[in-house]
Amino acid sequence: MSDTAFVLIVEDEVAHGEAIAEALERSKYACNLVGSGKAAIESLRTRAPDVVVTDYMLGGSVDGMDVLRAAKKTSPDTEVILITAYGSESLAREALSRDGSVQAYDYLIKPLDIDLLRDKVARAAKQAIAAREARMLRRQVDEAFAFCGIIGNSDTIRREIKRLKKIARSKSTVLIVGETGTGKELFAQAIHQNSQRAGKPFKVLNCAAVSETLLESELFGHVKGAFTGAVTDRKGLVQAADGGTLFLDEIGDMPLQMQAKLLRTLETGEVLRVGTNDVAHFDVRFVAATNHDLSELVRKGEFREDLFYRIHAHGAIRIPPLRQRREDIPVLVQRFIEQANKEQETAIEGVTAEVMRKLVNHTWPGNVRELRNVVYRMCIEAEGPRMDVADLPDPLKGSTDIVPAGPPNLAGLSMADVEKLHIMNTLRMFGGNREKTAKALGIGARTLYRKLRDYGLR
Image (cartoon, rainbow, N blue to C red; front, side):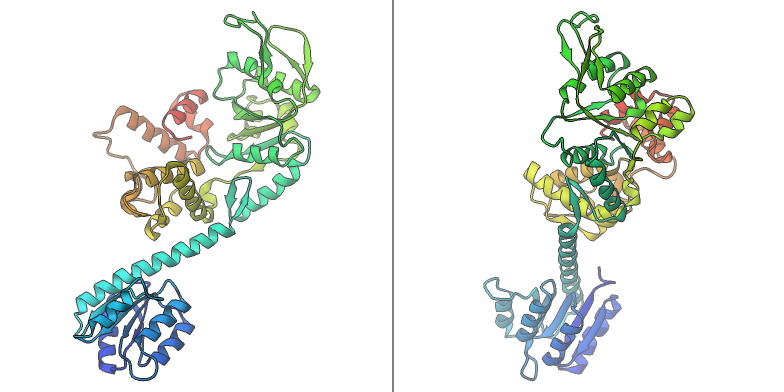
């Protein structure tokens, strides 16, 4: 902090003031030395300092208490250290009282101990800068663009939300594209809530989390006796979402055979429950999402071209990964702290500047979901009201990247930890693309999905 802090020194004894300035400048503070209380107030109006070091007794009509009052009025975050003569400490102690209209940070007694001066200025500067940064962040949070739970200041988020509002009013199918953890379901909910279907059912089916044999039943339902274990009739999610919206997450993982049946429903509104030829009709709007490049899957014959164009009629809503909208991270961190305080009954005020720098510079392969999990964990385990580097998860303390850049030392890690680390490294290498990650790991997409879920990486 000391290399950026600005200190205003107010001392009518020139030699004494120069000695203070020299001592603080050696500690890399930017200093401004003035010789009167009147000059100090003029300096306060020109540039608010982080710390004021002022003699209590100043020659002229403006004394140290007047400087204290002016400093707190001009810049409430500024901390003031009073200098008083031996034997008159009671005057300075009164200025430290919380009962007064203004409160000094601390006081020093002449003759000054330079080491003590530097120590008190360092602590005062740290507190002043932290308070200023917290206030600025609070203002950013208050001014942040928020829409149906989607938070951000970045141009990319604003642009996609503007498109979302227009598309929500239409009746067509919508495609949302984004990496794992970017908030695709949140966008789908926003589309539903801003459509004429708001207030009607909103149902979710994760196509990657359901086995191929059960996917048709989950989507369209089945009749009693349709297959072993079908002991009663069961309505599918299309019927459950009648009048509302059905969100098909990870549609890129849907088998080709099911894609054909889904296309029929999208085009005709017809639903055939498993085990019957009786056609039913339901009024459902479909919103689909994927972290795949569907056009590439079409090229490889793994996704139907006709279905692709059916769900891509308006072009996709593309949610950028967190690493491409780092300006949103501070407001997201503050909002997650507020949510954690409410849900976990914690009392965290914020994070230090160093912690925020590490969070902003991290690559976040798990995107917003990973950031939220990290913040919640820190809030639960933090020792004090403002979270410092010590409260970060171990992999984040010494680096701005949770994934080691080079081959890690795996000694002492469990096999589960090794597998988790390997998955994280591979996922990061492919920019969050799960299909490429699964192929590189030699496992299926559904297996990777399950492991991501089990390890809390989704």
